Amino acid sequence: MAEFARRAVVRLGFLFAAFLIPACDDSSSGAPHPLDPDFGAGGIILMDEAAGYGEVTALALDSGWLYAGGFLNDPVLGPTLRVEKRSAATGALDPGFGSAGVLSVPQEFAPTELVVSGSSIYVIGRETFADSRWRVERRSTATGDLVNGFGAGGVWISDPSPYVDYPECATADGVHLYVAGMDRVPGPVYYRWRIEKIRLDDASHDAGFGAGGVAVVAQTDRQEQAFDILLASGSLYVGGVSIGPGAWQWRLEKRDPVDGDLDGTLDGDGVLLLDHSTSMDALHCLGFDGTALVLAGFDGGPAGFNERWRVEWRSPIDGALLPAHGSGGVMLSDPTPAWDEPFGLAVDTAGLFVVGRENNVPIDSRWRIESFSPTGTRRRVVVADLSSSVDVAVEIQMDANHVYIGGKHGRTGGGEGSWRIEKRSR
Ligand SMILES: [Ca+2]
Ligand SMILES: [Ca+2]
Ligand SMILES: [Ca+2]
Ligand SMILES: [Ca+2]
Image (tube, rainbow, N blue to C red; front, side):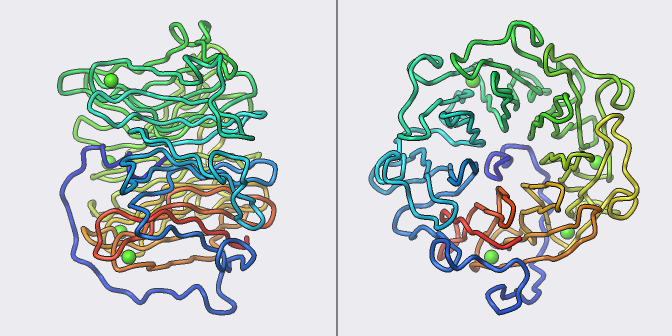
């Protein structure tokens, strides 16, 4: 899920003074996970600050192409949706896609996920104007053009309430697209967990899923928001946060992808709630290595209000921790006494990468990458203080030999960030 979207989650104002530790220079020889010199400029694609502020919020990798989606506040066009199609080998733009490899559409649309299926790329996100709505665009991977027949002119909209509604994540199974996030209802409990299942060809709802293609978790005592969705081992997993009363918890659901029903093999009722600390805890991303479910997010630390990275390996069947992984099924990382938080993961049978930020204070943070063996031993940590302001690794994709990481590179003088992609050796 994208870092910027999560800002909408109500947060408590516990902020810590900057705690300065030496930045790691990952450009030196022998550095962990070195940048690939054949990609971009020395392994990096960084947009010039004059192009406007923006952020990579979604990545997809397919058939040797890397798609990067995000937003850009263009000085001339204003807020634009931006999707790039690049060679995964070199980072070169594909001239056949959009305009010289870049799709740039002036609209208030912040993508949170890119899904490639067949010859289409689905751009999933939220319209960011006042009464925001769920929006999915189906576009040709060859040209970037909208594909008619999907929704209205290639665009599907879901606007469940006259308030702020937005999706955070999506996945596809070749026939359907599953989109999850939240809708908002009036009153003190206003974020509701929401999943919609639509056809990849025409965006029509699958009437057999939930109620008319929609599953909503109604609550009277808490608000809940889905941040990641995963199809694995024939089940649909959705992870996120459950807030209240008095507790922030991780929430993991297991559902039947056909009818959307909760699957009671997970924790008895299909829902696993994990209140890791006395303060804020949120589950941000999910993965599956073929055997274990991998969960990454943050917890508030033993004394609370000192957020740290938390990775867990759990059974896809009943959700139990897998103690042979990490330390009793868990790996923690608390690099600073400030807000440390992961946002993305990529996993396969050869290992796991988790990306995010450390030391989030009002004016600064650092780009952070951790890698793990298949059994959860931490292999390496890369920390890069790219700028004197906010640097955040948001999304990651992985192939056999490399990882591709997108996010935000802090700008001169602070404020919003610049669009950044990097490619590193596994
Ligand atoms: Ca709305
Ligand atoms: Ca808690
Ligand atoms: Ca911390
Ligand atoms: Ca920084």
